[in-house]
Image 1: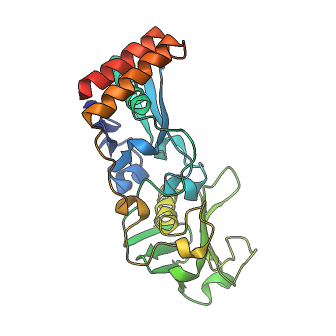
Image 2: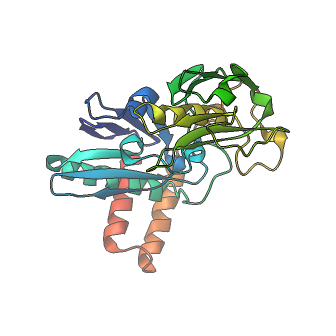
Length: 295
């Protein structure tokens, strides 16, 4: 097992998955604290890197495309402090961070995890029921219904009709966008047979966001809905997860432990890759050590 503990959080790798726990430091973002611990299967990873700085460094995980509903719903627009797949590392822990990276890369090599896109979510979305108040309203999701309630800051033309109830079965897509500069952000739901091109300020299916502290939390609502919608690679509506069931990532069986013979075969394959010059001496030694640890 490899582990790195920082004020920003704790990352633990048990050989099959990474457990990402946000820290309790006051500088840890509200989104990460609210999201809580994330379990990321090794098979969901496309890579890991560590960037050093003069005073601090940063560990970064790269997930396979389509593996996480949070990244899918936000389109990669989460700011660095809110990104659960980054960890600030103090300079005196650089050695631990480099060892952590080495362990993950060895495991990816050993298990031959591809960096290609996936056709189902491998990381579960936020749990429900979930309710967030930010911008001009409150968005609540219980797994079957989305309720939008307006506050005193809501444009009168949008609030006049009162609270909005959207049924999950009618939702085609969800999108979250942060406020950038003078451009306001939003949480928007696209409803089947009722499309709208109105700006979020007037759209009754949108919550407008202005860049305040709680705005990123709306991304959790988006992710919870996204996790239950058909995966972007799905070809038909029949692929939708039944209401009330777990997400595909939760229903999937854990990968089987590699047996003794399989590890020996992999060791022989690595030897051939090294002999042919595909693997360097250092890469071969690291991969071989990782296999021997598991024999």
